[in-house]
Amino acid sequence: MDKAIKAILTIFILSLLFSAACVRVEEMKEKTVVTPLEQAERATLNLKIGAGELRIGGETMDGLMAGSFRYNVRRWEPEVNFYKSGTRANLRIEQRKSSGITLGRTRNQWDLRFTNKIPLELRLNLGAGEADIDLASLLVQDLKIDMGVGSLTLDLSGDRTLNLKGSIHGGVGSGTIYLPKQVGVRVRVDGGIGSIDAFGLAKSDHTYTNAAYGKTPVSIDLDISAGIGSINLKTK
Image 1 (cartoon, helix red, strand yellow):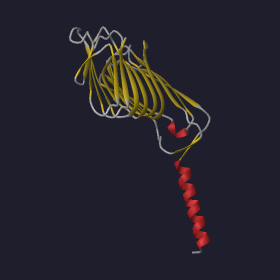
Image 2: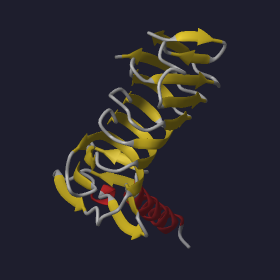
Image 3: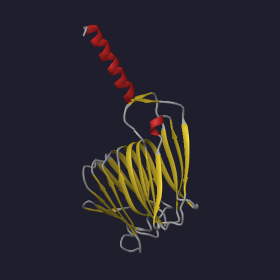
């Protein structure tokens, strides 16, 4: 085969591969999803966002979730799956393909509101971006967060009526965690965390507790591990 033809074919194939790998920015799209509760007595929530902004809060509502999704990359449209098993509701939300070469400014925003009527188990898998997780009014009993690259604001304050056990793993970036004064709190920190600032908490080795710990009928028990750049613990 002529060298010139080989070169043309090579360029053509490389251009196809580059095109397939590109993340193409389009006009903003919005998707609204409302999921039912269907008389469930508790729920498990699994959320996975590769890149973007995630906001979570609580509301008094009849359904399990009211969600708004805004994105300008077609393949980032989230997949939402809901099913009920016995008295438990299960909700999984996952961003579609998030890898590729970006051409233009991308936007991906999730704004999710969950019911404050039933106990919840919450699993968050965060990629790159910002996460603002307000659980102050939600009945979260089990919390697991896998961080990526970016920032996390987590509000666990409020008048809790149920024990909360949680963990935060991995990630490079920063995190601010708000904790209640009136509910017992214990935070254990391990791994390669760059810096820790704790306001309103007493330190013993790698464990931080507030003045109410061991004195209240319910408590918050939180484990933080691995490579988070910095963490701020604040009571309010």
